[in-house]
Length: 396
Ligand code: NAI
Ligand code: NA
Image (cartoon, rainbow, N blue to C red; front, side, top):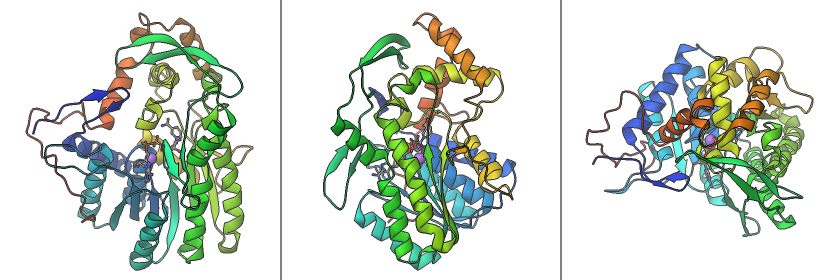
């Protein structure tokens, strides 16, 4: 069938398999072009189908010839209805990995659950024996704690006081003021339960208790800080509390891994257009101004460029892993450059519906958003009939 983007609010209901495949191929080509990375050989990626997790899987496989197991939660296609984009990404990834002679298997289901953890542990046991790198890259609005059975929903709210600032509806380009009422204690606890480090620690505990972690195993999760402009709704808001918890969890996991000489890291990444970040108020306006400046300066990166740099220059640079005063790896260094932030802050004041198309990179934002779903990818013939039913080779 001919597949076109169908929008509802912040999400796109359709995805294009050929476009997704082209995106994955482009990321693979990028990694190959940057040369080999002396990285891990047996890698588990939790949240492997889109965004930073997909980029991590591609970088491991095509940068270090790693065997990868990917866990994700995606919608398979049915006749006449497309899959979610991460499904098509993963189908394309496996196809390319297998072509290159690399082990790649995937598990589709709720990574927060005991069942999916069990399935993953069994697969590692049967096929890989142990893993030496675990990437934790989940972004989800909801988590059911398998021990309590309680379902927690995260919220994106400020803490302490109402936050009022500009935001943009990136579909229409309309810049308006948004006010977000402060969170209560329960909101904070729920958001920490979903996006904090509890589940990450559960994964590592489970892997360790069954001796599935290789000597010196490393695990890494992704965080964000961002500028003053977004602080009230991001780093000092509910999601920021969850990121504080995630970052603190790196230390408890490191303690837990001492006996095998392992270590947990958090990497602070750059603000990028993903399904997760598009849903956060104020962030899309910030990103569209940031992209404009970073592209002008020649320092713009997408997920794959970010993760390539994380692996090559930080994690596997042949000597010590550089970290900040809180022990975090920083690949948001170019975003946070003083000159970049000063320019974004100045543009922020001028941003209106009328000015944004010229002072910001709204077109780039929209393009990246559509790309997430496999649309507007150069070289893809969208007029051609696409087969929406695409299998992931390892999933029966
Ligand atoms: P994303 O939405 O592109 O990827 C989320 C992944 O999690 C997908 O593979 C999805 O299938 C999987 N997932 C979600 N719920 C799941 C569940 N219950 N079970 C199994 N898999 C599930 O998100 P993105 O942006 O790549 O985020 C990954 C991490 O990076 C998050 O911790 C996020 O906070 C962080 N980050 C994101 C930034 C951004 O600007 N997008 C910036 C810095 C950090
Ligand atoms: Na991800």
